[in-house]
Image (cartoon, rainbow, N blue to C red; front, side, top):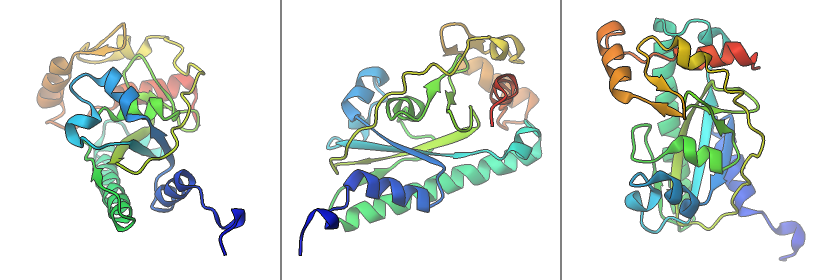
Length: 215
């Protein structure tokens, strides 16, 4: 018998699945708004029929943050990227079983995960161009799944989480961060190649986390 008690909100169902698969945060963004702020890096260039962008993240453990950018951080980061891909793939399979098309993204895909997460109400982008969340500060890594499943979009978080102290800009080893929420990718890559043997840096994340006293 179909009645109101039997109704399961599709958006809530999707979010519950994502959290059950191991994500710490999840939200749903409007692909049209994401396209407006992403230029060429927009969801429709990847999947033309996109109606919803499911964006999720997992947090870096506190004890690992203390090790940035040492090998423990690099190992955990690699584990995070693998976990993000696995979660995305499982979400994609679940969506397709329900009869919807999906595109599970990768961390290097042509999608602005941080902008999607910001539109999905998961946090706000700071001066270092990383996402700062209310729950975990900047210590999160993100991924997304595109789908033609029409879902309810989450509200943009109005609260500004970055106090623009500019510590991240001042302490960036290669001077890659600039005022105005900009990063010189070339300087960042050169530093990683010459000083970190192509490993990830993560110092701006740690500096922000220390400054904000995040949980």
